Image (tube, rainbow, N blue to C red):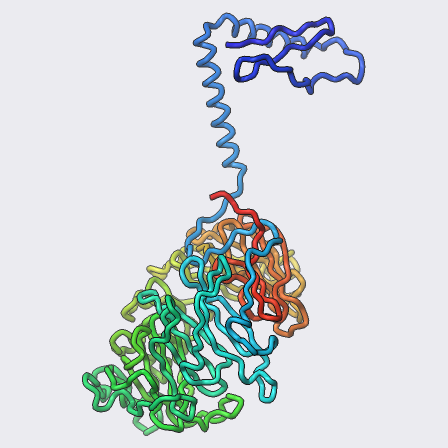
Amino acid sequence: MWEGAPARSDGGPRAVDVDDAGDLAPAAPDPAVSTAGPLRPPGRASSALTGVARAAAARWRRLAPTRRVAGLLGATALVAALVAVGGVAAGPEYAPVARASFEVDDLRTAPTATAWSTDLRSALAPGAEADCVGFDGSTRLGDDDVLVTTSAQGYVPDSGCEDAPGRLARLDARTGEVLWVADVAEAVGVDAIGLQASVDPATGDALVAVQSIVGSGLARIDTETGEVREVLRGPPDDGATDQVDESDGSDGAEGSDESDGSDGSATGGTADGSDPGYDPEGSGPSTGTGTGTGTGSSTGTVLQVEGLSTTAVVVSEQPVERFSDGGAAVSQGGRSLYRLYRADDLSAPTWTGNAGAGLSVRLVGDLLVIDVGDEPLVVDARDGAVEPLPGGLRNVESWAASLDGVVLSGRAGGEPTMVSLDSDGALRWSARLPSTSYPSVTDSCISVTVPGGEVTCLDPRTGDELWSRTLQAPGRGGDDGDGGPGSGEAEQVQAYFGTATDDVLAAVVDADEQGDPSGLDRGKEVHALAALSGDERWVTELPVASYVIATSRTTGYAATFFPSGRDTPTLIAFDLSDGRTLWTIELSSGSFTSAFWGPTLVRVDPDGVVHGLTTGVELAG
């Protein structure tokens, strides 16, 4: 092994080092040597250390060359192991990405670059006034693409915005390229004020509901080409351009089943003749005779889309007299015809039924829950099978997809209760809740939050409680629990969902901050709790009027919303390991668009130009 010459002590040249090739190289200045003043004699401690060092050096020189090489390699491995362990222990910890389809770009610094810009107003709404049309790209399609819908802004009579378009486009959110544009409102035949889209995972087709001032329409669209495959619309006076099938889909159709209620598929009238809210006429499954060009049973009804999922849609037909010219319901009397369709076939309903106006229906996946009378029903959109809603649940207040089924919360026997149904509508489990709550649902945890700061996690498969904990209000301490100034109880808790992490994101709001009309003050703390244990990963403080809208691998995003329009919405990015704020930017002023279109953060200008934003820096995988 190479060794440098010993240093001279007479003030001459210092020792030289040997580079990797074995050549001599000038030695770097020794930072331990000071030239600020005269040298002092060493003390006893330094003399002792010097003696030890000299003994070690002498022993090193007596070793054989092979022993020296082995010693160096061992020392190098030990140092590398210590550095690796120390780095892991000291580095930030991030929860694993549980739902890649929700993951967005990891922007560790504020976006300062524009990756692309696209003039959507020219592509989707040519000729429309800039302040009359809005755009939203929240419906994700694959990894990078989104479906962009138009909506009418400021839609009131004589506003000049009556002719706002109802178009749908497929956009590559990585490049800004518009792949196709479909005029859905023209295909359906209604004046659109807004669109709602969902994507069938089996076929890849999109179901697009077109909402008008009075009535709705529906189209099934090939997302590869933008071709309109099927439409479902109301009678001619609702804007339909083709002849409308006036059958109710149950009489005279092959395979229809007009139930008398004896098979358990429907409930009949009450003993005193009062309207129970549901009529068995036409309630059985039916192949129907519809052609897909309309479903109105008379020229005096309008079609309303009542529920839209990725695999099904439920519509109603209601008398046009129930609505004012502005779309408000002015009459609740009479009955309505309800129809349930599979997403891949709008030509014939799998189920039809008559019910009183104002019927409450909830559609999740293939299951339709009809909350009516004393015996709510569940209908399977795949075959029209109708069964009583299991679990004794009444007054359904919340519903969400869970493990290919649905979880519902409401009341059973007067007590707050949650039930879980499998994909066939059979009961998985039923659990009492501490109070009425709107749960946040993932495959790892159903988190229930109630006033007072309590957060409880239920196992989605069994309904058993996994853990429960109480959060403290911002800026408060103490555990006395007496409700006084030192109490750690909060006044409000909210849960968030739709993020890429399975962590429970729960927020607790200080009672003193809830009255702030602007929501600008930071009075809400968001806690990230591990789904399986309830352990707190991090906590961050956000404005009261803000919501966690997305997460990436290491960064979370919260947006403020101010419906009054007095303030500019903002986006706040924070670290998912410790909750610290990374950066804040203003969003599109007065816009109702989503901040992220697919994985990309976007800004929509008032003139309809959308920009894909980036930091210009990508994290290593």
